[in-house]
Image (tube, helix red, strand yellow):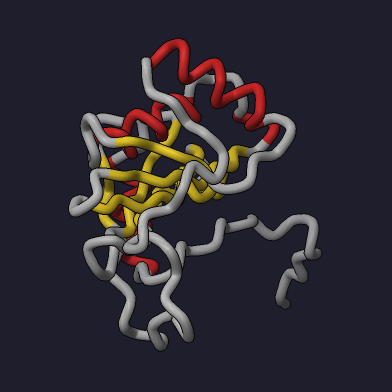
Amino acid sequence: MTADVSEEEKPVTPPVPEYLSPLRWQWILFVTRRQEVRFLYWPAQHPAGHRRIRMFDRGGYDIGTLVWKVCDACRVGSINKISITIEHQRQDLGRRLIRRALADGPGYTWQTTGQSPEAKHFFPALEKEMGTAFPQYGGVCEHLAPSPGHRPLPPGRHPRPVLEHGI
């Protein structure tokens, strides 16, 4: 006799982040089990490429993302996207992410892409707190602008994310 388990009774397992094996993801969840939030960092493919951090809660669910670029030649950084689920906002996570991005370009000029209504309140508060301006569309350097005909890398050519500590 087999017991039928309804869809509601089956345990829900969080999806494995892209470019990670299920075994590596289980290891990350295990070693960070006491942390409220774990941060995975995807490095840039080239010096002025996108860098990305995704945040995951204790259950392994995706709760936020930061995407940024840095041009060392022009000493410019650009915050391209920051998003955090509503349930996890106002917990200092956005500030922690921005501090992490700023660490890649200390003393650089920073800018943002288009800002949501929430971001139009968030970035001015950060400007006062951190002493760094975050103008919207602050004049992208030629290295941070997407190249004509730019295409993402084909599958299998992406960097493997690493567990980021100290954010």
